[in-house]
Image 1 (cartoon, rainbow, N blue to C red):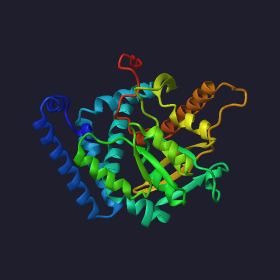
Image 2 (cartoon, rainbow, N blue to C red):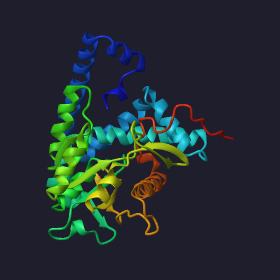
Image 3 (tube, rainbow, N blue to C red):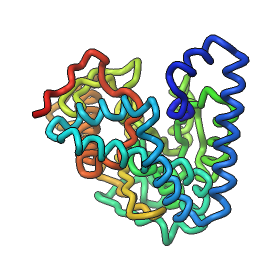
Image 4 (cartoon, one colour):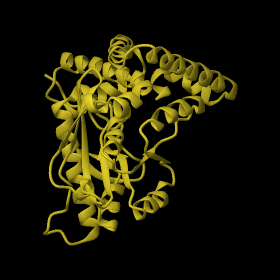
Length: 317
């Protein structure tokens, strides 16, 4: 997240200078900490609206805009340049809301969850039944994805989620404290497999955000182009006989959200091999995420590269 706001040339210099890096970390941590303090002084809705307006103006001027624009151009070849630029501003605006909403996660997902979260269940999943089996919950970087684990826990389901530590230790601590308000366990992504297995054996569900490109994964179609995709959710679901449940978060306005628990993803009955089942389930998940993003592209946070650098951009007429 901090790299979103640092120009490329400055970041490269900092990578080669520990002193400059520490200075940048202090500045970034101080800014985010001050933002949290200011956010808590006003209502969640007002904070969210202010963050949206601010980054909708400032965001397009930042270095990450190049990646956001490229991802949108690849995903939506049918859109004109003006439509893409409008989406870029909207994506930045949504990110601005998310940043200030970290200070209010406890209000949104706990103290005022009844009025701020609209829960919709599709299907009859075992995990929602009393003493049901644990499940694998998966979500994408849409609306405010931090709401997804909060919505799971709010329904009385014990959950452990995976998170990627931020390089800046100051910001990492701020985000960790904010996520603690969700009342779910947290496991670092690196080396998480063993811990997740322990959680599932204890009957604790697992939550993952899996719409990004990973270095070690399988090439699975995403918006018509192969993207290195994590197959861990499908592997865990098949290994432990758990349901793989996609969770969709939609912003209804301000800090009100709809959280949709979709029907579990299963391999087709005609598929017999384990690897084939895993890949088919992963393809189904990517296709579902793609449909969500097409429905609300302005809520898709795509500030990280999804496809190979040498993938040619579609020609626009």
